[in-house]
Length: 268
Image 1 (cartoon, rainbow, N blue to C red):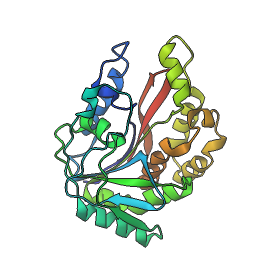
Image 2 (cartoon, rainbow, N blue to C red):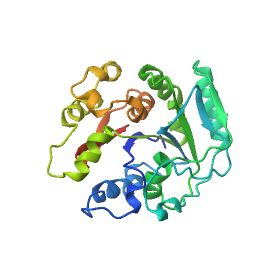
Image 3 (cartoon, rainbow, N blue to C red):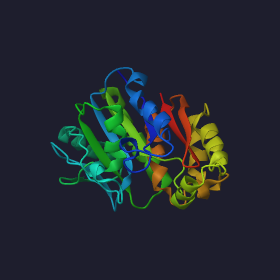
Image 4 (cartoon, rainbow, N blue to C red):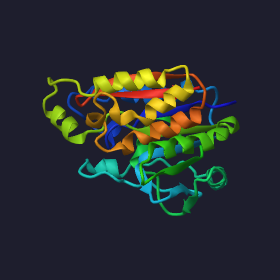
């Protein structure tokens, strides 16, 4: 069956696998991720993940049978560097991804060594703990061009009809100094509300062309550069939106954590 496309906030570091104060900090977010499979029409044949934590000078896709994990976070408890999520790779899917992108005029290379970064394995260890669905990661383009990433999603859209779940993994609010400050003062204001309202209104527009045009002008939205001082955590949403095409879109999750609002969206 045709899969939707999703954008999910992936949290902070290995946040779902450690103790926090207050203890309920990540509970709502973790419960949302654990419920993701129930939102799908059927079990995906494969996962194609675009994480905010991999940028390349040209688009690059993993082509491995058994990717390792890349513990690309610093300063967390020792046990969080012992996590496992042994999902198999899918070299044939990687080849198809590259072919679709090349056909759209978006050259794509292969990576034979890089493991899944925490934007992949941390949320998906919650959503798909059995790690038995083949998974491939695709990089962002280091130019961080919103139009290019919309085009990436549009080129990859045919994979949805083959049972591939295209999943963007980032954060709708990613201003770390603000969030770290809020962690020490949980009674402070909630950040990112104006941008979240604008983003939700934009994603939920019935006209996909209007949706895309507004997304391309995201930096002029209220609170945009507070929410995304650098846009890498937002661009996986552009890939998901591009792959969503003309499908109806809606917000499927919102939470306030570390003083900021985070949202997830579904297309289709």
